[in-house]
Image (cartoon, rainbow, N blue to C red; front, side, top):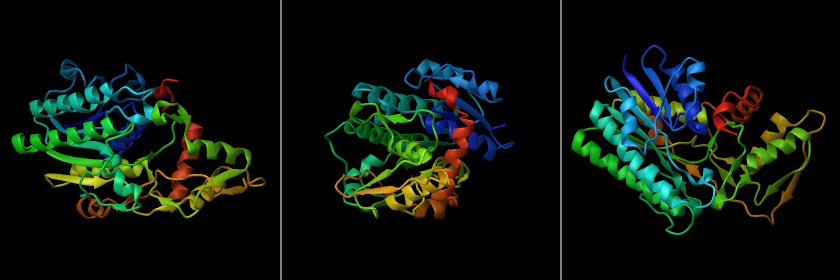
Length: 330
């Protein structure tokens, strides 16, 4: 049976992508999870796992050396989970690590690679409120804690173009905004500082029936994509009869802050004690992205399944199950 290797399968997104792919490709492909950490989580659940540090070329010898059809590369150092500022980690993981993954693909004769990159490569038009097109040219800031991260991701994409031209390795690039999925780790690290994610703060307040502040314009909107819709797009790209592609991961249907908070209250608040909304137009709001997913629908047959209600219903279900708690390393 042909194999699909998923690098970064222990991550917040990668673990859900692995689960989805195993179900989507059941009986068609063997799915092999890979990540840097040592864990028996996957084996205990009946899946094959190989611990690989993509920054170490020798580690790839542990992986299958034949019958590899596709590689899904979700492994990366990202600002959201970096304590402090260590830009050399971006270079090691996102440039050298990607190079090692590409070399593995070349050596084993893989048909294609799927790669996740950052929406911050088009940060400037996003800040202007523009709908982001998949084929937008790079337009990002060379200052700030995301700059080296973006540069390394862009460099990795250039490597993939080279491997396509030189070796015929098909490539599919996916521009990730925030991917929404429940995690037992409720924090991120803006500018290197550990901070509770706003969505979990609002969920906590809603569960207690306490007031939730709505900052800025209630009609400020952004795309909110569920991890399983992200996984659907990736899996459809594995099957696509195409040489290459560049896609925005999203729904194409922006939701407002008003809709987001109302849905959180409806899903999480006690029926007899719904959280009141406190409007704070004096507070800043931003950081969202508007994603055009037209070409993913036309070229891959992608169709998002999770609206806002389904997204937060799934959060609630996953909170109860907490299936990936062991992988979060808390």
